[in-house]
Every structure is written in structure tokens, then in C-alpha cells.
Amino acid sequence: MTRIILLALAILSSALLGPAPASGQSGDSSTVHPEARTAIGRLWSPYCPGMMLEVCPSPGGEMLRDSVESMARSGLTADSIVEVIIAEYGEEYRAQPRADGIGRLAWYVPPATLLAGLIMVGAFLTRRRGRRPVVVTPPSDEDEERLRVAMSVLEREERPDF
Image 1 (cartoon, rainbow, N blue to C red):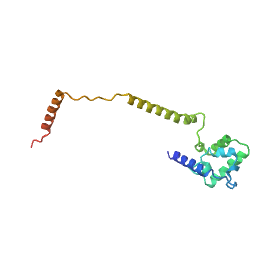
Image 2 (image 1 turned 120 degrees about the vertical axis):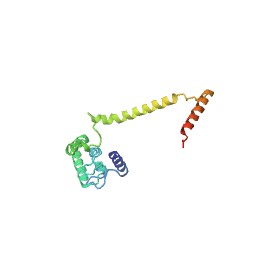
Image 3 (image 1 turned 180 degrees about the vertical axis):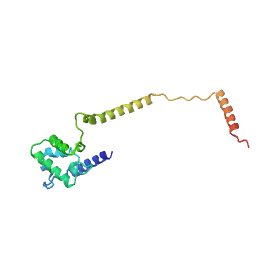
Image 4 (image 1 turned 90 degrees about the vertical axis):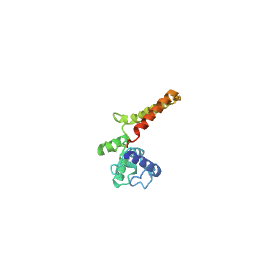
């Protein structure tokens, strides 16, 4: 849950502030190679726990962004760059689950669960709306007499004997 909140904050801050400039680029994010920008956006930072690489302010994060930039300028695609970084640092730094194998579950299970929940809520509300209200009939004279007798017996049994 904490990781989701931190991810949301990282996304919000990157949307408001823009990505952190790579070293030697004097803050001009338009000079970042498009493949590097894509790869950086797909990685958690190994140097700033809970932060995306694109917003990590540490020197290690800056150096990693620079090496991603140099890989992109040498012709590697964003997918290849991400795989190189993941091979070096570990699978836990992949920001998006893979779209193949077991990672596919991460893409399909949440929407399927949400859809199943909505279907169950809809079915519950439909069944509840379709029920007839319970009609309470007034008690008969015989029922009232039995109730009076039961109440008098109860009152006699509850009186203290002292």
C-alpha cells in the first residue's frame, strides 16, 4: 500500500515538475533521447527507495540516468535498456509488470476483479430492489390475550421474594 502511495506521489510530482534533468543537460529535457526518456519512465530508482528513476534527486540516480541516456544514444531501444538495468539491479526495479508470463496476471486480474465486484454489487442491488416489502398484520385478539398472560407470568417471576 505504501508503495502505491509513493508511486502516486512520484507520478504527481513528475507531472507537476517534469522529469529531473540528466547530468550535463542544463535542465533542457527536450535534449533527452526519446528512448532514454521512455526507459527512465519504466524504472524505479535503486538509489531512492520508493521513487521513480526520473525523479530521483541522488547523485547515483543522476549517474544512472546518464548511463541510460548514453545507451539510448548508442542505439539501444527502451525495452533493451530496461532489460539491461533490470539484469544489473534486479526485477524489483521494474515499474511496470511484464506483459508476458506471470506478469500478465498483474495486468488482467485487477480489472477482472473490479468487473466481478461491480457485477456482484449490481446483482445484489437488483435482488434487493425486486423483493416485496414484508406486510405486518395486526395480532388477533387471541394472540393479544396469550401475550398478556405471558407478560404477567414474566412479571411474577421477576419480583424479588424478600
